[in-house]
Length: 89
Image (spheres, rainbow, N blue to C red):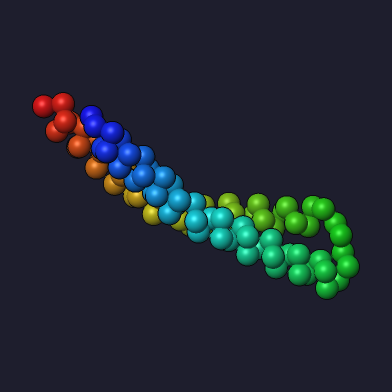
């Protein structure tokens, strides 16, 4: 295994992780901004008001995207398992 191959594998792993996490983080950020605007408009400064909607929508996003996340991870794993098998032979 060469250094170039290792760098390619790590780059692909980080890219895959970034692509999987991006929609989840985007939803959490959007909900946080909406709740912050709501808090600023109503002068409600309750700490739990920021966490509960963010947790709810983040979990909902993960549940909705779970088939896509699993498919992406299985594709990534199969690609590199196949590559490792060909390297060993």
